[in-house]
Each structure stands twice: as structure tokens, then as C-alpha cells.
Image (cartoon, rainbow, N blue to C red):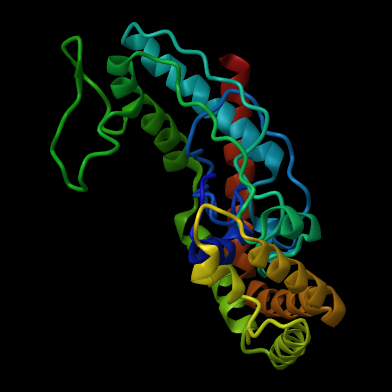
Length: 303
């Protein structure tokens, strides 16, 4: 089973409010970005609506449909570039995004996952990469894996390949024209800070204490709901009965103390205040998203 570090879950969760559909810890795109870790040719199945997607800052991320059409446009541009090198490419189909099946921004929240997997994430199978020969893959990705600042060049049949390959060039082509990096950074910062600041909110701290007391009554000593997933005992490949029992108690206590709802409301209030302070910049982000999506639709229609 492929395992993600629990601390990565918390960090990615803090950034997820402005993502294009990636779940915590999946290594997916962040605010304003729609580059997939593994390119695909079909729009992904829509994930369930989570706390992350309900947070106020989520309004300034791409919708699943927008992200899908932008990804499709990237594939069209990639195919055009590869064709100039004499390479025929058809994106592999995949059924769904790589994502956790439950929201982990506030720790484990799914009773069914707790019973089955404890704190291990259920990420599903990884999608296949481009179905191309080794030399053609170098044209697809360029020197993407090279050291930063490396002057290494990729040459294919006497022609120099774009530094980040045809796929990287396709992503950059749309990004250069339509992305709003300054506004993206503001949105990402709001999402990150609201999560951190929510941990110091009085109602959240009280909910943590109530959750901790509930866990103690079940025989588990944790002061924060962020702690169990970082327990070294639960870091291995195997899922122990102790891990499952802890996870089940964790979710039960969150439900009993209403912790998730309290935490979500506290963070939402923090985000709304920051959104009001940055409304002009965030509106420019929505405009950039709309223009990029419209351009992507034109590329797909022509493709």
C-alpha cells in the first residue's frame, strides 16, 4: 500500500483551499495551477464535496469542470508539439483523480475509512504515464528531472526539445498568458494562514480539549486531533487493530464534540475576513480563471 506521511497531509490540506481538485497529500496542483502530476486524456470523476471545497476561499479555485477543460487543452498543445517531432501521442484514459476519499484537512473524518484503514489514506491506484517509447518520453518531459539550473539539453533526432518537454511547454503556454501569480499567492496565503490561525481560536481550542477528554475515556491519550496520524506506531505498511481502534474512537469523539463543524466555522470566519481585505486581487483571480478556461475551450475545439 502506498503511504503518505501524515505531516504532508496537514501541509497539503492547508493549501488545498485553492487547488484544482487534488486531495491532501496527493502532490496535486495548488492555487491557480492545473498541471496534473500525470497527464490524462479524460475529465476526472467529481469527488465528494468536502470541508475544503466548502471553505470560502474555495470559490477562487478552478471548478472540476474548468480544471478538466484546461487539462484537455494542455493535452492538445502537447500533441501538437510532439507531432512536430514526428511522435504520435494519445493520452491515456483514467476514471478518477488521485485523491483521498475523505477530507483530511481537519484530520480523519470518515468512520468507514477509520474502520477499514485506520489513518492510512485510501488513494487508489496511480494512473499510468504516457504510453510512449523511452526516447519519446524525453521529448514529452524534457529535462524535467534535471537539477535546478542545469544546462542539460535534450535532443531528439537532431532537434532540441523544449526544456520541460512538450507537456511542460503546453502548461507554460497557457500559464504565461492567463495566470495571475500575485493573486494566486494571496489566495494560497489566505488558505494556509486561516488553517494555522484556526488552531488558536478559543472555540477550536475548547473543542480540542473536549475531544481529548472523549478520547481519554476510550483509553487513548492525545491532546490534539492532529496527533494520532503522526503516531510512529501507525507509520508502517501494516494496519494494526490498535490503529483502527484509535481511528474509530477519533471519529466518534469528533462527532460527539461537534469538533469538525466548530473548526470549519471558525476557519471560515477567518477566511471571510481576509477575503474582504483582498477582494480586488481575488476578483482578478476569478477573471484570470475565466479567461484561461475560455482559451482552453477554444484550443480543445480546434484540436
